[in-house]
Amino acid sequence: MRHTFPGKLLLFGEYLVLQQGAALALPDNRYHTRWENKNNTDKDLIDYLQYLKQIDSLAEYLNLTRLEKHVHAGWHLESNLPQHKGLGSSASIVAALYDRYKIKKDSEVTMDELQEVFASMEHYMHGKSSGFDPLPIYFNQPILRKNNQSVIVNSTLPCLDNWRIELVDSETERQDGAGVDRFLTRIKEDKDFASKVDTLTKVNNKLVEAIIKNEQRIAENLLNTFSENQFFLFADWIPENIKERWDQNRQEENSAFKMLGAGGGGFFLKIHF
Image (cartoon, rainbow, N blue to C red; front, side, top):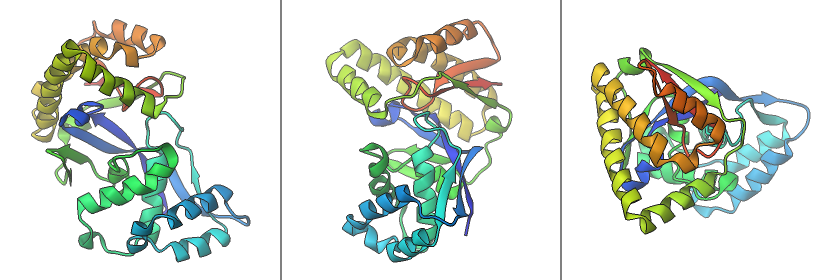
């Protein structure tokens, strides 16, 4: 049984995955969720258990009787993952629960099935979920989303080993659903915005492909292009304090800012290369 579970970074693909763009998510070990045994019961976990019991489809995948026994025996999930910051605080809980109480072996569950299970489990935390975020945490490996399929990236990614990914805190919480709603509305109502999103999606896809193929220089050039375009196209999703730092950083050659997930608050990324 694993005792600790990392957070996650949606490195590329935010919003663009909704337009059939590629997405690349990584486990991130700066923060963790872990199992601990204490002398009292965890009310939040009991409430979550009651929710899970109501989803009939989960009975095939989760041993909820065992979970209930352990909750009343004092097992807790402790986490130092900041909430509403884009680092997967809810996804980490989902991955930890599934890992400990799963019924089937991984070889018996397709990736699509698993993502549906995770989506049902994560719905409790923040409404509609794709089920994608818990995948890199559960497998503790990078996950690529492409052509509506999620796959484990089994090869090493030297590009990322040569980059330093800095978390930049906007010092405000984000509202997960608000950004998505705004994006989908703009796509429908603003043809110019939709056209520019399509262009950015193509850059995003080439960037992810370059990282997978370890084309370092190409990836860095594309990252600069991506950052520049995202700065203007997603200006409404960037808090003013981050916008100022991002604008100043546009003059630098060896680093680039980008959004992390939904934007609007939480953490942003500054990638040094």
